[in-house]
Length: 418
Length: 108
Image 1: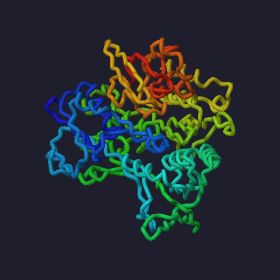
Image 2: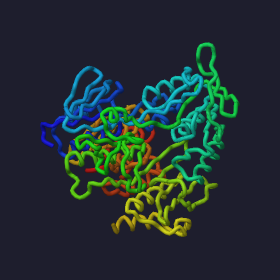
Image 3: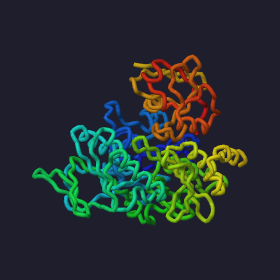
Image 4: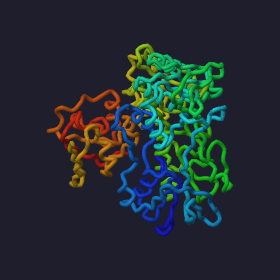
């Protein structure tokens, strides 16, 4: 890259903003444009379903970077504008304000959109998704007057919100069509523990019960959620958290290969050598999952951004393959879930600690090797697991299960020896 | 209002006046104090808001919690047994009314 070449980043979420930071840290002094479709300055999304939903009036969005970051780093930040198309042969993008922008390298950090319900009544007022600050502000404004909440979907977002709503003293029902919560991300053991924990907090968690329709009043406002069993659950407010769809439409229209995300190689490069994709919208060959995958997390966005900066600038040396260990967290009220690695169906699980104590970890083994660790209110195990798995080290199941075995010291020794 | 002074390794100092309830991390990120990242949004997951609290301000700080304890073991710059804290866990009005911290040279 020469200093005359422009890098254009589509999307100013965690991935896009970290990429700017990393490009400048790597010494790229040329022009950088970042395009965000929201009017807001870029902010952090994870707190929106947690702290932001508390009754505490001081809650306010946390910026990803201060406003002056953009001036100090000479970043051309376009807010409230969408990219409408990519002209790959001409190396330009068209924007919704009618302008056209040339690029030398283009980065798609377009993120994901909430999956929407299509059941009868889904267009009623009082039914919300939760992704943007605008979503969160709308929900927060309604919570004050709400008494009864129905959450559709027992995933991370749904349960984080449910726990926050319970803390505010609201009646909460969660409808989940699967037979256990967070089924896509968690082992059955941990999943079952969370089901009981939420029930203990007073959440009416309905498993194996999906949403069939919504009842509304004359004004078109939701009054109840009717489940697949025919039962009606009264609702002043409904929150829908049924997963996301990667924002691939620009890539697709430009003829780039897409399959559950924009397909990239291990340098985050698409089929077009001048176009990259990363974060929630990108489907990449995962070293740790040993298959292609697409992840939705802060760690994934920021680590891939640091990697992409080097890919763009040709700074990898012999480390072109992205192989950072994925990790995740979800704070559901005071319940703290942390995951190191990617849990997959069929993993053999070994318990460390007693779930009844409220503090334990589940070690997930695949083909006889440690592949992932889920920790509940057990941050020491989580950090030890991150250290160990990052070195691609395993440990015998007997030791994992033995509380007298010093897992933290073992992981530190493994990291030190690397 | 409470006061936070951030001492950079090059000798520069950023001084901020903040509202009660504002954490050191939030104050730094909102105002663009270089050297504090706050990647996880204040959830004690990432250790990118590591600060060294100046000794005269250590009294009165809340105990280090389990999460913070583990993250402090993973900071990029070496942990100081007395002075290292996560900025996201120290809030104005609760932990301090006036505090001075030194920033590590690197967070990542």
